[in-house]
Image (cartoon, rainbow, N blue to C red; front, side, top):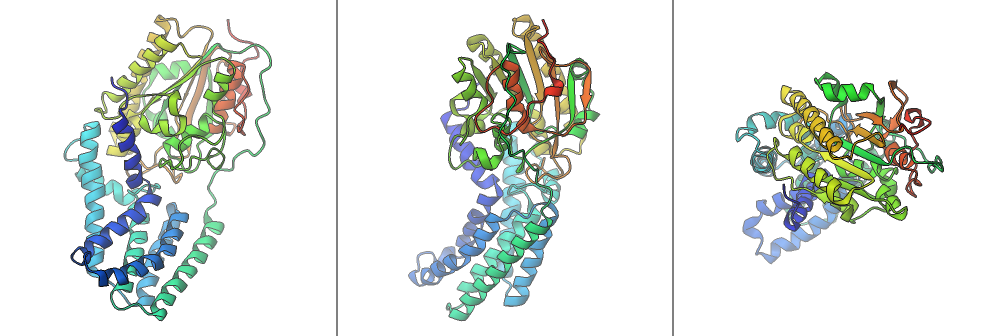
Length: 483
């Protein structure tokens, strides 16, 4: 079990440039354009045409970065691409062919096969399944074929149109006019049809426990990327038993975009992504813009630790005990659990958060609609049982400890898609048991992952984070601490 090295932290950040759709789009288009003209790169005459062309397509790139076109809205992108071809009467089959070939190589062979084989031990034949997952993938990553390819082709064809012959005012004006029309259409489409983004509470969290703490320790286990419906299908005897002894919320919603660092940031600040400042896994400005539960605990003289992989450091910094994610998928959760046990022994935190990654990785590598995904949830049940037994044997799980089990987001179709809140992404498993938790309660009351931080604060008897707008899940809390 190793911590994430400085190189791995850097590599994870670099990978997110290619993984997140907003950053992938301009990088990919520029790369393809340069390859198309590799023989001309030393020619100053070429750059006399290319630089103005790059400047003229920049507004189009900005529109595509601004608007995600999630789920059903992405079909508008193919209409925009067809409109470009009809209006400009321009098609470059060489550019289109190279773009398709490079995209397939990057997503199917480099990412879906080589990268996942080296990082998680995925089979060397993973490409045989992965190409189909990419075609149906609906999330906000570069692996979303139906969103990324029309965006890339529209910009690439615009560039090739501008450099095909000497630039004129008429040609430049036509492209800028097309871009303006596309921007207006994008605005209207999102305003009218993008209606499934969650509505977050706007008022600051007001519930504060001014009495005795309901628990002296809280352990949060996050099964990263666990679909609620597949969680219900899995045989998980330990978790089912513990959930019967506590409180289960059946309608807990994640945030948009449903990306891991975004979700964790909302979970442990109680704030919406727009408030805490983390809006994708690609974190351009490290750290949160609001308080986290770890800041609150420090101020109260208590301790909190988050055990997870490297990319969580971008939001939570030194509060993360990182574990390398370069491990076979059969080993990664065991490594994370070993790190959590070490944190408990060495630091004895009042709050321990444990990220389990294998379910999420299985969805990304092999898809969520295959038996391996449910089997991985069942394996996770055994691992959590073993971790809880260890905690009990070592005095960290007693009648003064509360346990929270949840996921940060679900996963949709394709390559374990999560980001745009398709079916399977939006709602997550959520249960609590132990000290201060009501027993034998199941509720369908709508809740949010924003409610986690204020609920932890209430259990531990500290103020909620300063920027929190989540609510305390008081229905789940016993009036007095179990003793």
